[in-house]
Length: 179
Image (cartoon, rainbow, N blue to C red; front, side, top):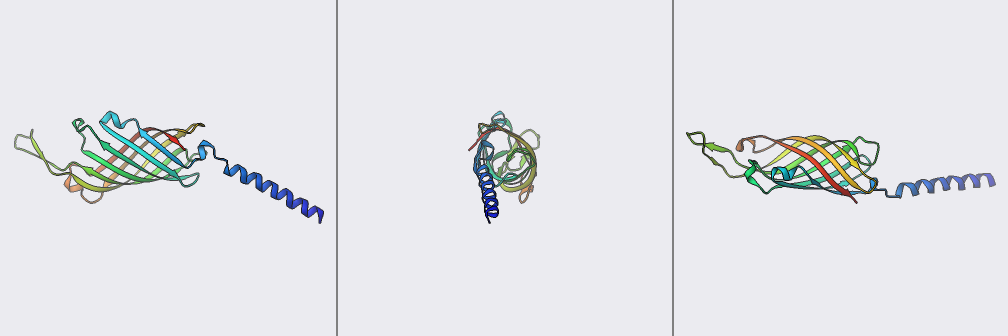
């Protein structure tokens, strides 16, 4: 009887030590992250994002992209893009990842050129949804700072014929903080 009681106490002690180690929150295991895209201002735009980790290997997020300088020949006005990511790294939600995304976007309408082929009129802005996929890589420091590089490609779903292109591209080189 004493031997079985001792075994039970030892088993419960190991279980409580294991449970304690799982609840300690290192910077890698925090659940939220905000980030800014460093490439976007080079093209006259601003992009910010938020990501929420579901577990060690997956997350949900959303990013918003707004063009503030239309002189840089941008067809895109803005987009809001929710996404799902799956991480392949050994550490908590870091390393190489694949993502699937949706995008609500506002794009300039079709350009109709005059006979001189130099002047054009632009149709009204087109609102559309896009679906796509991408790849990337994320590094997380012990203090919770995040460095991320990603590229993604998608296709417009409904109104591609009302604009001059039917695809969207997301490029990012971002810094952020995990909290």
